[in-house]
Each structure stands twice: as C-alpha cells, then as structure tokens.
Image (cartoon, rainbow, N blue to C red; front, side, top):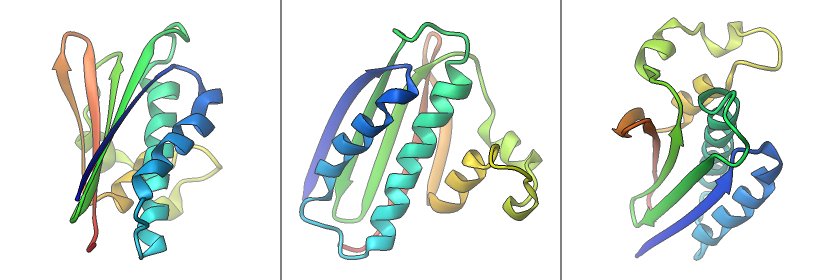
Length: 140
C-alpha cells in the first residue's frame, strides 16, 4: 500500500480544520491502532500551527504552506514546506525543559512533536524554504 496526498493553504490558522479534513483521506483503510492515528493527527496539527505561528510570523497570510503526507505499510510521513528563517530544531529541543515543566498552555508544541514522532527534522530545501518532516512508524 502506498498513498500520497498534497495540499496547499495560506498562512492562516483558520484553515486548520481544512488541513485535518484533508489528512483524513490517508486513514483508508483505517489504521487499527487508534492511538497511532491520533498521534499522526496531533503531529500534523502541531506542525501546521508551529509553521503559521513561528516560521511564518510576520509574513502575509497569502504566503503558501505546502503539505504532503505519505502512508505506506510501515509509516506515515508528514512534510510541511514553509518559508521564513533558519531554525535548528535539534538545538531548540535540547534547550526546552521536560514537557511537565513547561508552564502555561503555550510552548509545548515542539516538545509534543518530538515525543510523538519517530523521526523529526527541519531542513533548508531551497532558497528561503524549509521542510518540517515528521515520521510515525506503525504496523499495518
């Protein structure tokens, strides 16, 4: 099994429900472990929110965000292409306290993503573009 889907949206948190609805098509046939599917949805939502709020901060709402998700028999991979400035995800994760020590409702997204994903990276791909990559393994 191999399924690949793509979506382009503007830099706007109000389209988050559209992003989640788009992602649903990847869950056919359904992943039997509902916890894995929930984790994948959380990765997508947290990743999208972080791109809008951090990578695209100060950019026009018309700035595109390209999303791609791939499902095969072993994993779901999520790619979110963004613009903005360089960001060292590995260094930032080292600097963040344990999730239990993060106070308030905000500031947990990156830590949540690192705990849920089996692989995570944020790399420069071309010009001022970057790709947030997250992979979640599962058994089909």
